[in-house]
Image 1: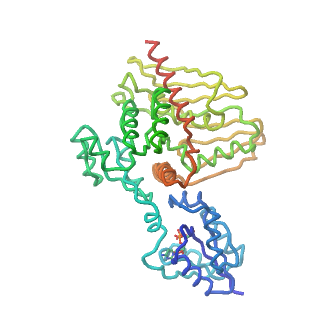
Image 2: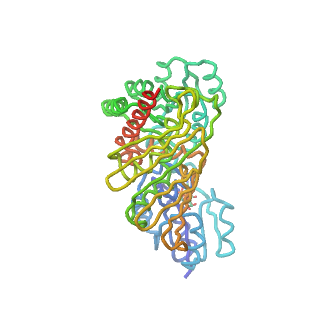
Image 3: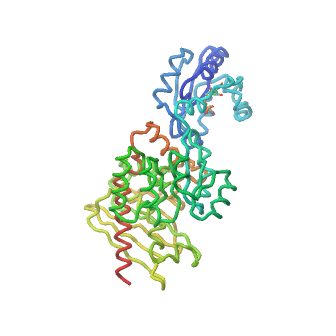
Length: 446
Ligand code: C2G
């Protein structure tokens, strides 16, 4: 019996997939089809898959060509499967020609001609109109956003707004966007906006966008006052628009895997979380000269608070800050202490003090260690009392990681994801509350 294997996402199942499976089956007597998981697709940069894994499996089965369906969940699985199932032929569409030649030492490799003029990407854009995205702001994070948004199908970054005509034109020219200095015309040109302006302007821009019925993805920290954050989410609900805070760590596959493992009981009950993120900034930078909104907490607090917020929740019994201040009253190093009923956390952020950017999650039966850059989670270790008993986990973190939040943003807009469970309304509001408490304390000490 000649065994054939092939793999795919098979999203929005179409004739191209059908033709592939038909010819794959004809290559032998027994066809195994590997269907990719959503996580695997995300880590290999294939974002915005519409159909669930079960739907995609059902669609493959309905063709009647597959004698067996398996899940493809990680890179390198193909070789293991070929050995495990005693496969004689590996086949895949010709868009992959050459990619899997390394398998030729283990089985025959056949690339089948791809069916022309049909793909899941085309269907996705037909099924869901392309979302016209605008960006407010032309700074560092804005420059990182454009290359990432190009990787997410179904969304098109096309407009940029900044009151400053010169920087808008320069940014628009660099990224081939339409430049706007008139906010009315800017909003008329888009369906959704990415707010990447300085922290203290976020609230106004987000409010403006929601009142004009635009979906909003806002850079962190979205708001520096709890009431403002609550108002923005109420506005989003009133206008039936998606509002998401862009803390990229919350949307990255590795971090979500980490949280799942931490809460799985593998280290017992989690009792302590210590998250550190420091980034030495130039003393003339906005972060260290804006005495009202600059400083370590407003810049890095959203990241370092996230693990405790995701694992312990948004209702600590006590919140305390300890800071080192520079002469201009800005915090160059701050520890944020949360005390919960049966657990505690420390979030350490620093722009003027360099420390080891680790995340340590401690439990009653072990601990998890994530080295810097844990905020772009790709590798972590689970340790136990026995120093030789270590489990290692790794996920790929692609590029700047903004693609994950953009993909989730679009999925929620298109109704494919029920809600922004990766960063909820309550969590965003709580983080803005912590920011407000800190800024008030800092103001009062002066
Ligand atoms: N295909 C095709 N013609 C099309 C579209 C897809 O022949 N018009 C083939 C692809 O070449 C692939 C299979 O159908 O062999 C599934 O396509 P996708 O669902 O897009 O899966 P893909 O991302 O190509 O992943 O590990 C997964 C494999 O790498 C294939």
